[in-house]
Length: 467
Image 1 (cartoon, rainbow, N blue to C red):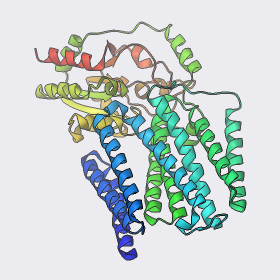
Image 2: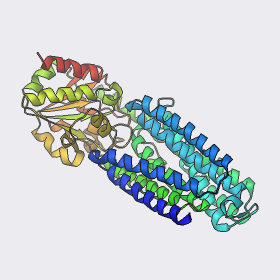
Image 3: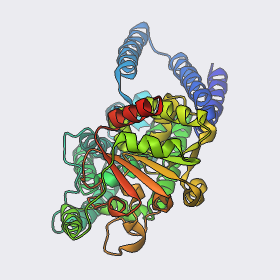
Image 4: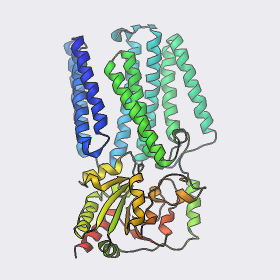
C-alpha cells in the first residue's frame, strides 16, 4: 500500500506541475485547472487509503469533504467576477488557518504523526511545526485584512502610524526568539504565544498597504499559504503536501516579483509601507484645480470617431469589472471590426485587484486571445492608434508616473495611452485611483471624458454604431 501511495503522490505532483504550466496562459488555463482537480482527487484518495483509519475516521473525513465541497460549489456558482479577488483572499485565510490547526493537532498528538511523544517531540519536528504555525497565522490574519479591504468592508487607504515599521521589526525579532525558545522547551504556552503574536503581525503587515498594491498582496499571501503548507507537510511527513506547498509558495513568490516589477517597486517596499496615502491624494487633487477644465464628450461623439478610425486599443481596468461591461465591450469591438477597424486590448500587469483580473474578464466575454496584449508588447502600438478607449483604468495610465518625482506612482511602468491621437476615458467622475493620485491624462488636450457607468456608456456607443 505504501508503494501505491507513493506512486499516486508522484502522479499527483506531476499533475500539479502541469496545472501550473497550463495556468500560465489563457488558452491552456482550462486544461491546467482540470489537471489540478484530477491531481487533488488522486492525492485525497491516496492519503485516505494509506492512513489506516477506522470506519469512524473515514466517515468524518467524507462528511468534511461533502460539506466543504458543497460550500465550495455553491460559492463558485454564485460568485461575481468582480468578487474574485476577495474570494481568493478568503481562500488564502482558510489555508493559513488549516496550517495552524494541523500544527496544533501535531503538537498535542505527536504519536499519531510519528514525531515523538507528548512533551518529547523531535527537535526537527518542532522547528517545522513552529514555522508552519507562524506562517499560517500570519497568512490567516493578513488575508482577512486583504479580504476586508478588497470587499469594501475596510478602507483601502494605507493605515499608517508613527513607529509602525519599528514595531513590526520588533515583533518579527520577538517571534524568531519565541520560535527558538519553543524548539528548546516544547512549551505549550510558547506554542500559543507564537500563534497569537503571528496573528497580530499578519494584521499589522497588511493594514499599511494601500489598494494600489493589492494585486501584489494577493500573490504574496498566496506564496505564504504555500510555505505554511510545506512546513506542516514536513511536520506530518506528507511528501505531497511538501511538494504542493513548495510549488504554490515558489509560484506565488515569482508572481509577486513580476507584479512588483510591473509597478517598479520592491517587495520589501510593498510589505513595509503603503503605496499611496490620503495626504498624497489630497495634494494631487489640490494641484488639479490649477489645470484647464477637462473635455467631456458623449457616446455619440465617441462612436463617430471610432467608426472612422483605423486602429483602436481598448484599455480595461477595474471600472470595467465593477460595471460588468466586458460583454458589451466585446460587442463594441465586434461591430468595429466589421467596419474594418483594427481592435486590440492592452493589459497592464496590475490592472484590477488581482493578477490576471482583466484577462479573466475578457476570457469570460470570449474575447480572442490573440487580440489581448501585455504592456511591453502593446506600448509601441499606441503612437499608431487613432483611439485609445480607456474603460475604468486609472493609475496604470497616469503619465505622472513618468514625470512627477513627487508622485506616489513615480517610476511605475504605465500604458502609453496618451500617445494615441484621441483618448476616450470612461469614468463615473474625477476621483483619483487606488494610489490616491490625480490622473494627468484627464487634462490632456487629446483626452475626452465619457462620464457615466462603463457598461451604460459602452452600450450607448454600440447603439450609435448600429445606426
